[in-house]
Amino acid sequence: MNIVKVNLLVLLFLLKVSFLFALNPDSLSGLLRDIDGHRDKVVEMNLRLKNYDRVFGQLVFYDSDNIDIVFDISRDEIKGLLKEDLLNVHEGMLYRVRMQVKGKGSLGGIIAEIINFKPLIFQIIP
Image 1 (cartoon, rainbow, N blue to C red):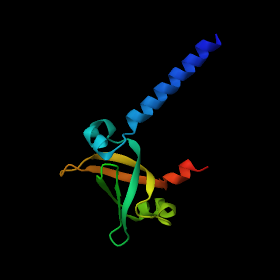
Image 2: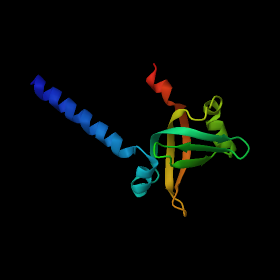
Image 3: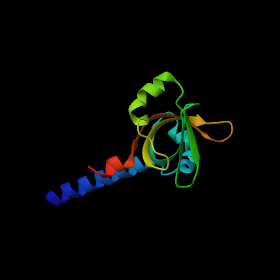
Image 4: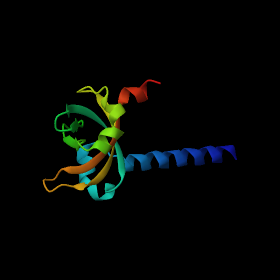
């Protein structure tokens, strides 16, 4: 009886992990390939910060394939949400970025709205 319960728990865990990987693509190109499946959903990805432009209010991240994504943070409500995250940003640092995917742009890029971003090192070190 205990072996059946353990096998069932392992199966449920594997299903949950595979479901999470299906929801969170590992690169921006993977997200772009399946943009219709991710439309209006929240996606988390590991991205590096390329540039933080304080004048124009833009955050530029890139993934392991060197594909860029630009987030517009010039609106006051977005700046308010990201206030804590923007205090100590470092270019080249790896971040866990949460974004809501809106769709595909006319030039083929991803249209998404940033929710938050946290340094990945904070998730690794307790």
